[in-house]
Each structure stands twice: as structure tokens, then as C-alpha cells.
Image (cartoon, rainbow, N blue to C red; front, side, top):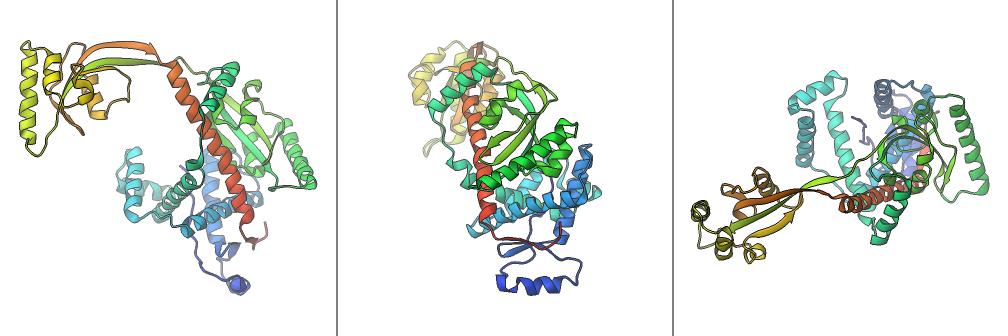
Length: 431
């Protein structure tokens, strides 16, 4: 779990007053580390974040870079985060206390703890719960901002899906996964030839360190400008389609344990390291052929009447009455009633959860007890089950999602770089 502070201690400061404020702050321990537009990041905030990152690096069993390099990396991350939070605030994105409390409860439950136990665990590990609470609020705000500014603008055409599947077929199974680490040596937006040359020279020095045996994760922490630099550059397990196109084209040529050469993009120069690989499998699913009868309550029929009626219909079927005929006469699902209640072959996830749970509990030929869904009261009979290879549909859906994730990653990187370059940032401490 990553913990990051996201609050600003000073707001609404006019640029003309920054130097006066900074001079006064010099006499205290908590000085200004950086000015970001009309907010500041303090040295206390920076120190807290550096300590947190050090703990995370130790937990990864990775050697931390020198203190000055680490502080520079952490400060840059906080600057980018601050710019995003300011944009979110200025455009009305909020997370209220009720939403935040519900999210904290879910996090505690995912860790199989009560909220009180979770709070105690955090504080025993050296994290203030009040700080963690505001960190989570900040992460929720950032997620909503990115959803609005990036994710919601992603479009994927049918031709893109077709082209992706065709390309992937030549490269390997769409479900093959790669554990990737990444270093980015970034260049400015619309960089000049001289700036690109300087960036390449720096990237070549980093590549030389790796070629001479430097640890990839430690090198990423020290030198990478990527979003995951402080996690050792880890991108986690990714399918090839989730990687930027320029990575997915070469990943199949890199052996496990090796790194690439320099990869040029509009963002700068990249190096990727393949830590591990695992293969996907054929996608088999169980389909169910079923039929049902639906009775809905209304203004003239109470729920008790509906339950009694559906129970009576079930008893008549058990006693030998024809299910299809009773469905045609009684079911209030117009789509299936004329077919004798027949739902055809259904795929997992196609039905609402209550219906699917009842259907999945039956053996072929069995009829369920009456149960309720959002549509009303049902009885369902399973007729047959079959195993099918759903790889084609699965592959198309997976391809669409992989393209979407790749586009989100690429667009987010570009968007963040633009935000950073457009922001007024002044570093007030020596790094």
C-alpha cells in the first residue's frame, strides 16, 4: 500500500508575497520546499514523504539511492500531485466525508480488519491515521480528475480491435503476461534538437550503468522520470497490449532478466526490463440453457399475493403441469414468455446476480424455489449445461480493454507532462 500526503498548508498567496513569506519561514524548521502556482509544499511535507518512500524501498529489499537524489524524486512527485489537486479543486471535484468514510471501510474490509483495527495497524506501522485519511481523499480526487480529463475521452474503434488481434496473433497469446520495470529519461514538450541530444546523452549514461550490472530498480529510483520511479520503475504484470506500442513491439525479443536498449518516444528515452513472463490459456466457460417464469407486484397485487402465486405455479409444475404452457400464460417477462420462458444459452455475468446465483445452484432438470430479483419474483429451471471455448468473444473484449488501458497510460503521461510544464514551479531548497 502506498501512502502519500496531499494537503497544502498555504493557499491564496499572491506571488508578490512569496519572498516575504519564505524569509519569515527560514527562521522555522518547516520551510518552503517549493512554490506550485499559488500553493506551497513545505519541507515538513517533503520529509514525511521521503521517510515513507524509504520504508517502501526497504520493504522491496531495494537499496535506496543517495538522500539528495531521493529527495529530488519525491519532490517532483509531490509537485505533479499538487498541480493535479489544484486543477481538481478549481474545477469543482470534491470528495465528502461520507464518501471517504465508506472507502476507508472498504479498505479495512479488504484487509480483513475492522476500521478501528485498521487504524491501530497503521499507527503501529508508524503512519498517522489522520494523514492516511487525507491521502485517500487525495487519491480519490485524483482518480476522478483523471477519469474526467483522460479516461472518459478514450475511444476505441472496431478496426483498432481487429488490427490489435491480428498483430497480437503474430506476437503470441493475447493472455501472455510480462512483469516489466521501466526507466524514463524525459525531454521537454516540443524539445529542441539540443535538448533532445542532452536527454539522449543522459539516457546513454543510465543505460551504461545497467549494462555494467547496476540494479535496475535502484537505478530507476535514482534517475527515472516515470510515474513509478519511486517503486523501482515497476509496472507490475502487464499483457503486451497494455504496454505502449513501442514497448509491445520489442517485449517478445527481450529475455527474462534482461533489459532493452534506448527506446525513443515523444516523452524522451525509455529502457524496459523484463523480470518475468507467464503464458495465458484457452478461455473455456460454462453456458446454461434455462427457462423461467416471472411475476411482478403492482398497484393491484401485493408482494404476498405474488409470492403465493409463484409458489402455486411451481407446485403445479412439480405435479406434472407443462412449464412452457404455464410460462406463456403467467410470466410477465414478455421476451421469454412467448417462448415458454426459454432464455436460451446464457453466459456467466449475463444475468443479474440474484438470478445467476439461483440458476447456478441447480442441476439440469431441477426447478428453483421462488426467489426475488430487482425485476420481481422468479422460478427458474435449468435444462442443460455445456462447456464452450469462448476464446473469440473473450479475445475481442480483452483486446478492447487492453487497447483502452494502453491509451489511458499514454494519454495520462502526456497530460501530466503538459500540466507540469504549464504550472508555475519554483524550487526553494537546495537539492
